[in-house]
Length: 169
Image 1 (cartoon, rainbow, N blue to C red):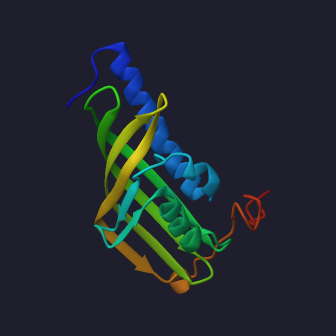
Image 2: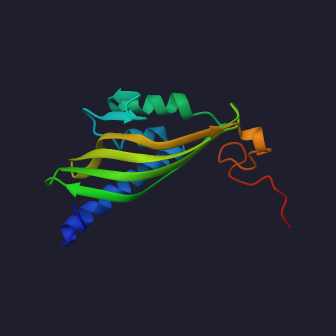
Image 3: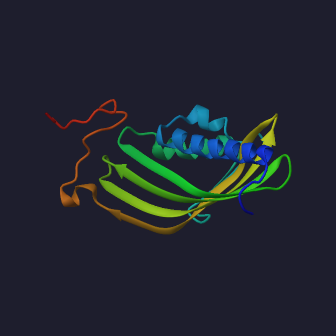
């Protein structure tokens, strides 16, 4: 492991980083069709929450996301960092990512925050890195009612077109 020491390896690392960042952008912006294209066409696997939720095939993985997150009242923000990427050969790689997330559901009145680590496998398919397997295990997760402290949602990508309802002068 360690930082790449040659330009070709550095470029592969950067391509894998861009893939993982795209995965979370698609997740947080509910871009399900675009997310679908980030997984290998055959044999993709996702195992979330320490294996509690496991899906095989990119159709099943994206349908899980769509079913559980595709409501205007559900908002998420995922950040991954500190990637530890290992190139196994020209077409296979693994990575561990630290992850922090916040999930707000105005419909079901909850505010969830947590952290964990993703373990991924990647495969180069037709010259492009794709996700073969992804999954996380939590280091912690907390949840509380959104309204418990008088917290309210004042901006939403979906219901306010990303504009704040606060009147600032």
